[in-house]
Image: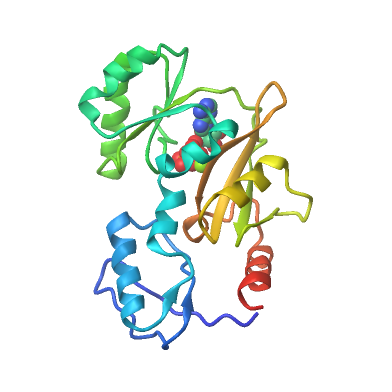
Length: 230
Ligand SMILES: Nc1ncnc2c1ncn2[C@@H]1O[C@H](COP(=O)(O)OP(=O)(O)O)[C@@H](O)[C@H]1O
Ligand SMILES: [Mg+2]
């Protein structure tokens, strides 16, 4: 469709030998930690090229606390905690029925899961995050549990403020809202239906590191090429 492609290793001798001057770079790959993305950006800038998504735009969607305030109307109530020592007390003071726990980036999807009903269960989740991922990225997010209808989650992508659906159907209102309010040229928006029928934003994420969940490769490249190769 007109894209040229190069591979990039963020971890082993990151370099940009493949890059032509003045090129615009769109990344597709694993989630990069803040520092690795910043290094990537620096290397690209040194080549006189530019990233489609700057490191500040990357973090605007990759780290939950950076987007939460802008989308709080549409997403479960969330408290971000930088200091893990205080987390159990914070949970207790919230006194919600159920808590959904993740770090700034990811939940625990396997084993014990991410949902607890009691603050004393928190250390167990933190240990599991450490065991599975080796670290807590950024800090903790305590989210109020909301009951979603199973299998209703749909991923949308926003490119330069315009939202796209996987099946060409119109995008619902919360997707438009996010597409207009978030300072990133390419990000995903996950919407699920709550049991009372209301559509909620489960999370947003950087489009470059989002899985294609529900999207064919052709459809994703088609919407990207519409916007990027114009
Ligand atoms: N506040 C919440 N209440 C209930 N279920 C939730 C909540 N947040 C997320 N979930 C469920 O857990 C899944 C994973 O959460 P998500 O925030 O998408 O984490 P991840 O970044 O690991 O994908 C979601 O797809 C949704 O089904
Ligand atoms: Mg998710």
